[in-house]
Amino acid sequence: MLQKPIAKVSVLCEEFGSLPTGESVQLFVLENGVLSVGLVNYGARLTSLWVPDRKGKRANVILGCGTLSGYLNSHGAYLGATCGRFANRIAGASIEVDGILYPLSANEKGLHTLHGGTTGFDARIWKATVLEDGLRFSLVSEDGDQGFPGTLHAEVTYRLCDSSLRIQYEYACDRSTVANLTNHAYFNLAGEGSGTISQHTLSLAAWDFLPVDECFLPTGEIAPVENTAFDFRRAAVIGERLRRNDNQLKINRGFNHTFVVADHDGPAAELCCPTTGRKMAVQTSEPGIHLYTAGFLDGSILGPSGKTYGREAGLCLETQRFPDSPHHPEFPSAYLAVGEVYRSEMVFEFSTFDFRETN
Image (cartoon, rainbow, N blue to C red; front, side):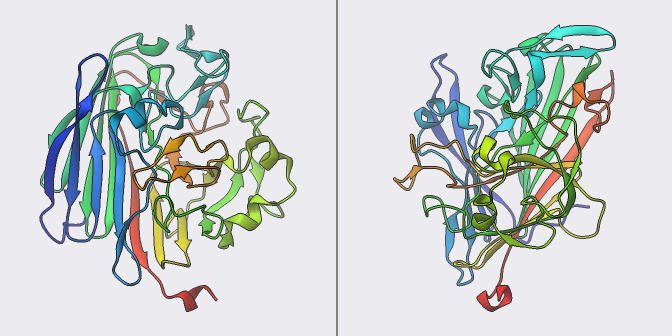
């Protein structure tokens, strides 16, 4: 059940610019006295997330752009965006649903589909509705959009509850299809523009992960993390793991892998920054968390701090169905039947810790 907000959430709205199509983009700022969240209806995306440190000082802990043109020019980074219709990758840019083959938008190397295609949900204007404790975005994706069958009705709701940001997804389709939505926020708990996440510690409640090939597609193997660089069952310093001599890390310039979330009590992931004392616990109803340590950020994106984002400037913890699951029947299914309403939730809960707790 949802927690009740500790205070009424205030919502401010202002113009953020216009797309080349003339469509208006609005910026919404949610505030509850603990957290402050920036959102835009372009891609139903997070633009900022202000969180207190151990001294009570707030800083923005996600990577973003200060202008709409920044987001338009960094489309491939998916900064803070809602990704869909199918987050992550689909091999061969095609799917088979109920015996019918559907060619999809091939926006990665002209061969594969990434995050829904050339014009995915990250590049759409969503309808915004203000709620008592947050904001709801809704979108209608027409039949044949990027090649996917059926008209999909999708909602993404952002709620502030005490020291937590909750992102809830709900979607249904009038034809059988596949769907997989997630958020692509890059976190740096030291603060946006404050260097890399190499000194952060990470723990994951995952006993297995999905190895990938040179196209970043899962091989189909579900591999144990034990005795590998992928073992985050106990908190580990990310930078130390990134420097391991592992071919999977070389292919991806770091982590770009889905971890299989175990059925357990407690959060699925915990990210900690020892310098600020910020801690983020992640809960999810999804079977996977995709860890991306931003190995392909190249310094071309300018953040609102005036700093550019290079390799490992942040990391993503994308809760989702497994990538390329339509081609791997052994993976949890992303099949969405006619009339079925799919609901999922990801929760980012923030707290602080004393430095001595990490020693």
